[in-house]
Amino acid sequence: GERWATAALAVVFVVLSAALVSFSQFLLHEGRFPYVLVVVICRAAVSFLLNLSLLGAAPSLFPSITDATARKGFDFGIVTRGLLPISVLFEAQIVLSSAAYIFVSAAFIQMVKESNVVLVYIFSLVAALDRFQCRSAGVLAAIAFATLLTVRGEVNFSAAGMALQALSQVAECAKVVLQGTMMSSGGLKLDAFSYVLLVTPCCFALSASLLAVAVVWPFAPGMGVPSLADLRAFWPLVLADAVVAYAVHVASATLIKRSSPVAYILAGVAKDACIVLSASIVWAERITPQQALGFCLQLLLIFYWTVLKAYPNEFQDGILAGFARLTASDNELVQLALDPQYGAIERR
Image (tube, rainbow, N blue to C red; front, side, top):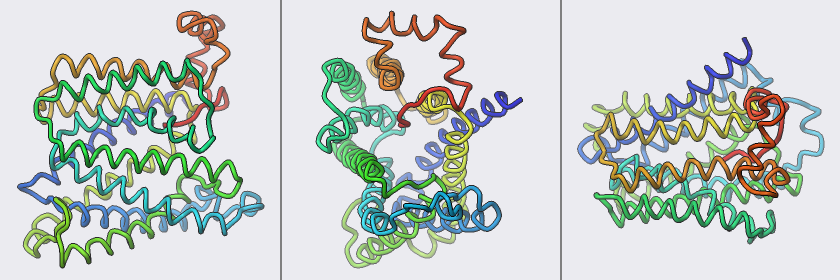
């Protein structure tokens, strides 16, 4: 029963993630509501209010805030100093990525995002959180090549959209590495719900400040201010987008808590594939054979990368020998996917 519940939760996570991407692309279309800052402000406000309500209803979901034992050794000074730069990077990630939807397709954005593992590894080397290994560099070079295939195969390429998405990924990966740096120092150990509860007010303030600037100077596409008529016409959709975004957060946090890390990675790979497939089917976005090949290579290589990071010793003799070892004893990969206590791996 527990395993079936976890599998059902993974399906919900995949479906909600794909639905959010499709919904965002629909909402931010030039002919509907291309006002990124307003959408981000609404997401931040709804996430904070719903998380605050959840804190009152189920405080056990926020152990970093409510559990006295978990708070022992909790350095609020480091959190305060780290929260602002993390919030700035998170804000940049969301705003830039949302703005990219105005120029390029959801399928293309998802394909480009698969290169995040490359950026995180490079930033981790700079921050001394990881060490250089030729085998790791080879896998990541292959992922970069597969990403290049998807970019070169895009028929509706937009330099502006690509630049916005690239900057968004730089901010996202820098945020991930900064979080890793602070966690390694022992000062920033937050559960998923507490993290969102603390970050969303900062994001709301940053977005509101940018919106105030945009009133005087609409400095970039998607950064303008909607008219009252647009707000009256589209506020239900903007609110629905924020609710779906929060539902994705809840599903993701719950899946992380109830499943194994490997299962979460597998769900992430399935989510990526589902987003690209839904973009192709629902929105009739054209995916060239070259992009399809590149994307399949990305998914395979990223799955190998995550397992390699978890069990480097098993792959000393090569890929086939490594997977043979993992599957030799009672279908170990199946155990990895189903047992929350089995194995440990970095989550993407």
